Length: 216
Picture 1 (tube, rainbow, N blue to C red):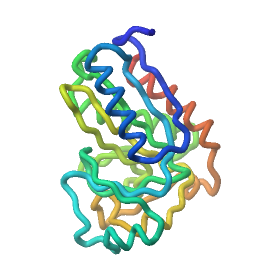
Picture 2: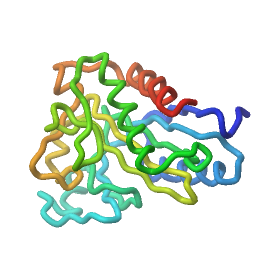
Picture 3: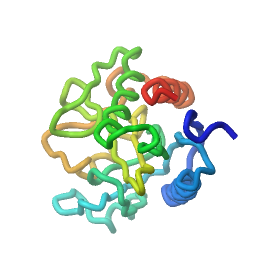
Picture 4: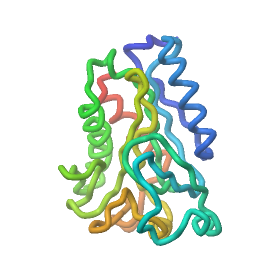
C-alpha cells in the first residue's frame, strides 16, 4: 500500500446510490483514522438525489419531501455543512477522505483548496469561475453556481466534498432551493458552453488538479 500520509488514492465509483457511497465513505474514514488507508478521493455520479444538510429544511422549497419522491428524486438527510442540494447523472461528485491534521491544514484552507481544484479544472474551458465571499462553492461571473462544496469532519478526517455540474438535468434544480440561496442561479458546463466534455475526461482533470492543490 502507498504511504498513508504522502499519497492520495483516486477511486472511480461510476454511478452509485447516495447510501452506498456514504457507507464507503464511512468505511474509508474509519480505515484512515486507524492508519490503514491513504487519503482518498472518490469520483462518482449519483442517480437523481436531493440531500438535506443538518442545518436546513424544506421550508420555502417549491416541493415537499413526498412530492420530490413522486418526481423520481430520492431524498436523504446528511451531516455535511451547507444546505439542500441536488445530485444526479452528469454531475461529478468528489468525496474526500483526508486527514487534515496530518496535512497541517485548517478547515477554511481545506474548503479553499477544494474550490481551487474546481476553478483550475474549469480554467482551460474558458469558464470565468471563482469564489464569492458570502457563499461557499464555485461561481461563474459571481452569479451562477457551478459547483457546491461541503464537508463533515470526525477527529480531523473529512467526508463529503464537492459536486461539479458538467451536464446534469438542470430542471431538477428547480425542485429545490439550491443551497438555500434565492437570489442567484445554478449553471453547468453544458449550459455555459452549449456543450460539455465527457464525464471521464473531466474526472481525469479533477484528479490532476486535486493532486496539485493538495500537494500529494
